[in-house]
Amino acid sequence: MNLLRHITASSADLEVQKLIHSSLRTGRFIYRQTNLDSSRVFTIATIDCDGIEIPHPISDFLSEYRGNSMSMERERQAASLACQFLNYVRDMTISRNADFTQLVDQGLFGLNFIHGSRFLDHQDDQVNNRGERVKRDTVDRKEYILTNFYSFFQKKGVISQSLIIPTYHNEKGQLVEASPFKRKRSNAQKEPVRKDLRDFGENRQQILVEFIDTAKSMKWGKIIALGLATQGFGGVRRGEVVNLTIGSVMQIGKSLIVNVQDRQNHLFAHKKNTAKEQVKKKRKQDLLPSNYLINLYEEHLSWLKEYTREVKPLVKDALFINRFGRPLTGKSYEKMFKRIVERYLKVLLAQGRYNDYTFLTSKPFNTHTLRGVYTNICLDDLGMSERETANARGDADENTVAEYLEELTAKKKMERAIGQLTQAVIDAETSKDFIKKMNMKDMRL
Picture (cartoon, one colour):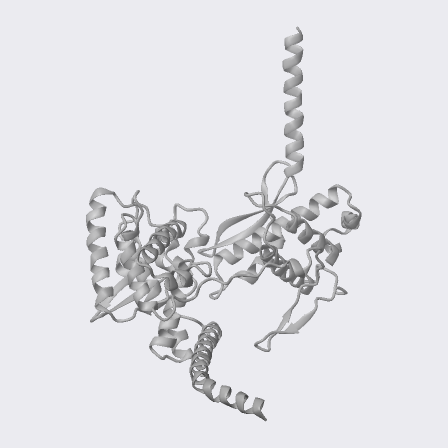
């Protein structure tokens, strides 16, 4: 009898827990990747009392992150931040926090800067998987999106028009909005943001070839060796590389041309989230003419032909496939890339090339670095103009290339200044005896 009561009580407790869990989930914001007009987008939804996901009008905010110049990863980050913020506001309102009580009646219409500031303070206090406090620049990126969030809904008339979002002119003379939020984490604590490595230095072409050859020497690295070449000798992005098919690469004389198109539905229909397989701009991309690239292309096709005899490919015309025969994803591409980086850095150390090693480890080194290498090959090695380089990279405008040119020019000026200082020291050596004689003459006077 006691056992029966214990079981009944336990069952009742379980039902109560289910109800509590259901009530906690009800009204929460989530984001999902969906198909809209034959393209993939993110939408924001809320969960009703029956656990059904209901699309929310706040998804309109994500439209700001769509377009030819935007990547799907940026839209995903905006969707994630919006849900984090709205769920935080919801939880604080339910708990009747003093700063959020006005939202009980007003809802989103009552949002003020204090709510955004409290959310950012909360984010600043979080810790990562290693138990370390999150980096400030991580929250800085969230602050930037949250500023856009407030601005968007203020223009839509959802948030009060009396809130003033400050503006300023950036270095390009453009009027942009500044953050209206106040954070407890002072500017003095700000950690310097390390921009990604955007070049291989003066030996860029040699290092690029060596890097690709290192990939070819590795069992699984050879899968993406051709992909690395399209990036370093053509500026193709990671997502664009994995979207290539066998028929998308054409050989004309000593040149290769890749037809960059969005083939996600063809290659990655089995994936729910294709944030790392996005194509930013559809185009035909010329690679730098080279017998090296032609040979690399032929080697890859030969390897692919042999490999598909062992593994039945999921998509027959995929140019890059994994060991299971599925089209290679952007995430897998990145993993292989990191292993190749590790191997190549060991090669440099073994050769005693400490200057190259130091240069390559000075900043974060990722797949996008190769696009920067290609940019500097165009600007520095080939002497192409900003416009020509922008066209070669497949950019819509010259602004991004201008940043590379400014960085390259600054580096050259620094090198010239070092050379001038070295010569000045040499010249000064010849004057030492004269200066000593003058000093001795002064002492006799």
